Image 1 (spheres, helix red, strand yellow):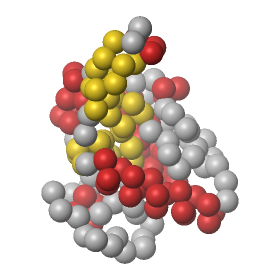
Image 2: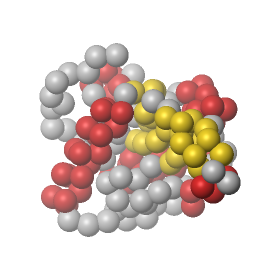
Image 3: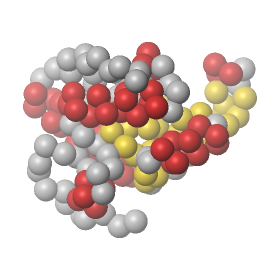
Image 4: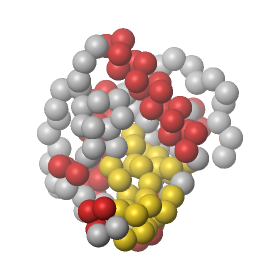
Length: 135
């Protein structure tokens, strides 16, 4: 999937193609890691992020993760530009794909995080916490 070289400055981080498709949850290509929390067992791992800015993106990411069966507390770097969930194992990655997340290459994840980091610094602070119902 090709993305435009420059994304216009809007309140969305998503490339236009993803935004028009109403998709803003993406994950990167899985890499096999040894997971210390699982006794060093090796399995494919990926990052699940939202391409929307601020509380909207945080809310959408948490709501999507809850639909996958994740707990809200499993989010990493909550309220910061790099907030994400880890997708551990092939079944979890496939559930995310079936639920509507779009797989992108790692460079796209880095590009989104760089944009978020820059805008996050301009706004100067953590995101306010949001409440998301499990239903």
